Image (tube, rainbow, N blue to C red; front, side, top):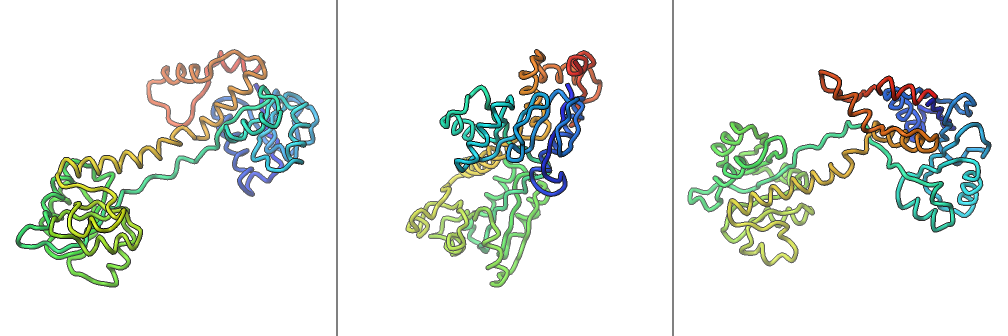
Length: 323
């Protein structure tokens, strides 16, 4: 199977060019010969147009078009005309497919492949802040921070602390591998910058309440605090209440699960998967009956070392593609 991408935009200019470039790179890495130009290639098995907008509706070989939002009647009319010739409109979302079906475009002419990311964005550590001074009475329950640190990962959380007396606790946190930004004296200018920089404000004490709790809410920072004193009087002010170590551990785990759910939402939205999904669409249009995922996994298993981002399709699969 030979693929030609018809990109009407300069491939180095903007978003559509990036789609074309990344798709081309990954198809070639998957041993599917692919190139790019601004005009169709009659020698290719597939001419894929990025995007539909500039496609003239003429048939060269098997034509597919990338479809973004269709938000005007004339765009809809244009796409309807194009799909009389093109075999498939490859949309960016399920919603667009459903909307176009409702607009009487045949559903067999539509599919969707979600956009991809570059796999370069890495989550930063969740920043938890404390702004209280350790008291001789132990009313700040500062040792709870060491207890909870033993139950969470330094790869996921870091702490910002302002207030005197935390040095022994911070030494423990350091031995556990945690990053701590510490200010042992109260500095109002630094404080007004620190509080809004937090992902969550933490107060361990049970002594009426924390003034930092009020400032955190004023800065729009979610709070993890004990449900007592004036904390309870701030309507919707307590984001995560706790009293005990197990309760606090549950809070920290829920914060991590919430973040990881966001990461997982696009974990498969990679350019490699984007290319594989296009291959599946084109296989169907060309009548090629090969399970690309299975073939790639089989090829991967034949290697003595794990493959990372480059997968080479087996010779038998390549022969089928080159028909």
